[in-house]
Amino acid sequence: MINYKKLILPLVFLGLISLIGCPKKKNRPPEKPDRPNGPATTYTNKPEVFRTKATDPDGDNMRFVFSWGDGVVDTTSAEELYASGQEAFGVHAWTNPGTYYIKVKAIDEKDSSSVWSDSTAITVSYNARPWLDSFVGPGPSPYVTLPNRYIKFTIAASDSTDSVYVRLVYRKKRVSRYTERPWIGPRPSGSVFRDSITFTVNDTFIVRAIAKDAKGTQSDSSEIYQIIVTGPLWKFMTILPPTGGEPPDTTDYEFTSSPALLQDANGNWRIVVGAIDGCVYCINPVNGARVWRTKSVTTQDDPWAECYFNSTPAVNQTLGHIYIGSEEGELYCISSAGTIKWRWPGNGIDDLTYDEFGSSAAITASGNRIYIGCDDYRLYCIQDNVTRGDTIWSFYTGSEIPSSPALDAQGNIYFGDDSGYVTSLTPNRTVRWRRKIGISVWTSPAISGNRVYIGTDDGYLYALNIDNGNTIWRFTADEGIRSSPVIGTDGAIYFGCNDGKLYALTTAGNLKSGFPILLSDDAITSTPAVATDGTIIIYTTDDIVYGVSPTGRILWRVPLFGSTTSKRLKSRLFEAFQPSPTIGPDGTIYVGSSIAGVYAIRGQSGNSLANTDWPKFRHDIRNTGRVGGSK
Image (tube, rainbow, N blue to C red; front, side, top):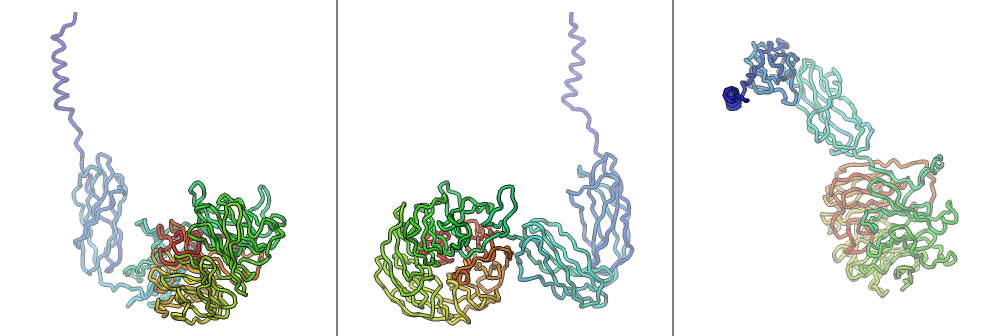
């Protein structure tokens, strides 16, 4: 039988314990830290290190508070706690001469504080700071470069009494802690120093220079120099090595065709571009992988046949069709999946005109008509009937037509020809006007408001009245113009020139301040592209892509370094045209290389193609060549 009376007292005791709780162990503060250990004398503005340590009776980690005697109190980082008995340190520089008393206390993880340590005295004597005379990088900041390239800096430093040292410090833009390069020196005051840094990863880096004198007193740091390490995100090769085999002797092919962007049947963005190996390529913009390759009929029979695609593809997004002319005289219509839908003028090899297409197609707003110039002296209007291309009309100029036609909002057509004429036709082939403006016109028109801008081989950039072709103004460049004009976010007209310069004109036809700027020792025939922030992006014959501000300042340059061992196939048009860049919706820049390959360059996120009247070659990312075409 249970004796309940005997159970009552233990139960009551347990209840009281649960109410009042068990006694907790009291946290004990750290012991008094050691006296700070450091130099007894120093100079003004010279950083000095003082060390100490403390023990915690409970074994807690600690941070330390240094009182430097000049009103400054520093606490070591809460993220860098010191173990009990571990040596800690603080760094400080005094700005004024005098004797200062340094002391320290420890705080454990539970915020219990020790008493202050015994103090240590330091006597500070006056010493003038050294100073930086100059800090110069390889170009204007921000400077864009490739990974694994040496970035050279020049630093000059002086001191009123001492010799000097200099060093570079750098960090990633989103990281607070700097990496320090070794000190260089000592050298006499006023010396010039040189050092270099190489970065292995794509990122944005901040670089500064610092000087110190022989006594260790440091200068103020320089202004920041920003480096954007981007490099091409990828390079597309036209020739792929066979599976399990060695790569072919020729490593790549050159490009004069400019990329177009489209969305496939699944909504995926794709890049299409013609190559001088006689193929049209579709590229995945994410990684540069080949999605499909479509061979011309000539290269289907002979892979080494000379059949170039100098023409730039135009995309009919509504039908999912790509139009591109070839050197064999055929206009190809290719589906977004890479299937040849039709060839014009005919599907039989005997029907080929054997006249090159240097001109690129323009697509009407309805999407079922294409205009394109040919070296047989005719501009053609072709109907896309989905399974075939039908000739609607042709217009005879008596001269080759390398200029690509442009369409205004009413569907009127504008183009130049090799005899120096600019012609405007209605959609029904009626001549609106025809004007002789130069010895030869290879550039493609840019339409803005009531004006048509176009350049000539004898070095003139014209602004023509869109209704009658009358000259509004004419600007004289130093050499011929084969780079087509574009319209910037400031309304200015930008174009390259055979003198290797980038020009910018106001709408009144005057040279903008800061222009022209010399970018190349060779002709610039590539057409610029304008980004939403106003940056003008242009490719030069040196195989370099530049970003230029609307004020004429070079913001960055990216060398492409295409293969110089590629098979140098050439056509008559190859020397005349260079590939032009385009800008994707996410700000990525795509450009073919006249040396080898197609490249993707990381641009500023969201800095896509500008919404100006005519921001790039063939107007928009689909190369429609039409006012109102898809940007």
